[in-house]
Length: 247
Ligand code: ATP
Image 1 (cartoon, rainbow, N blue to C red):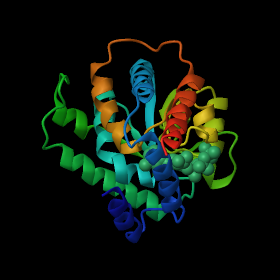
Image 2 (cartoon, helix red, strand yellow):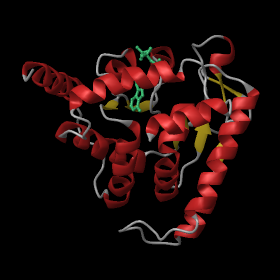
Image 3 (cartoon, rainbow, N blue to C red):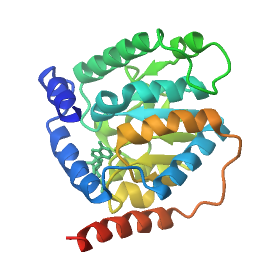
Image 4 (cartoon, rainbow, N blue to C red):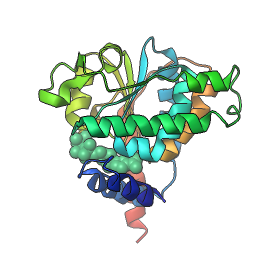
C-alpha cells in the first residue's frame, strides 16, 4: 500500500525522482528491523514527544514521501501540540511545494470528520482546522546551506527552536543542529548522517512512528530527559545484526 501511494503521488508529479530510491533504502532497513517499532524506537518516540511539548516554537518539516506516507498522522500531532507544518524540499520546485500543500490541506479537511484521539481534551475540529500549513513563503533561510536548499519560511523553520523532520538529508540536519535547534528525526537508517547527528533519532518507518507519536504527544506528562542518542542507534544496529544471524 505504501508503494502504491508513492507510485500514485509520483505520477501526479509530487515526488522528486530520487523518492523511490529513498523508499527502497528505507524498506531494506525495515526488513532487517522486522517491520515493527522496537522498544528503543518507542523510547525515542516518547522523548521526541516530550521535546515537542516542551518546545517554545516547535515545527514539523515534511518532504514528499513524508506527506504521502504519514501526512495525516503528522497533522494529528500538529493539532495536538498546536504547531505548524512546513513543506520543505531538498529538490525544491514551486509546483511540488504547491501540490504537497494542497494534498496536506485535503488530508486536514478529511480529518475534521473524525473523532478526537483518545486522551485529547479540547475541540478537535478546531485544533485540526487551525494547523497552519507553511512552505510556500520563501522569506527565510537556513544558514550554512547554499542555493535553493537553504530556503525556508521565516516564521516556520527559521524561527523554530525544535524541528521534527522525518527523512531529512545529512547536510540540512547538520545545518539545523549548527543553528542550535533541537532536531528530532525519523529515519530507518541508523547509519545515515542525519541519524547520527540528530538530537533524537527514531529508527522506525515514518508512518508507524508518526501514528505512535500522536498518542505519545497527547499522553506525555513529562519534560525532556537526559538522552543518549548513540544508544538507540546501537540498539537498532543490534536488532539488524540479530536478523542476519537468524539466517
Ligand atoms: P544522509 O544524507 O542523512 O547520510 P541519505 O543520503 O540516505 O542519508 P536521504 O536521501 O535524504 O538521506 O534519505 C532519506 C532517509 O530516509 C534514508 O536514510 C532512508 O533510509 C530513510 N527512509 C526512506 N523511507 C523511509 C520511511 N518510509 N520511513 C523512515 N525512513 C525512511
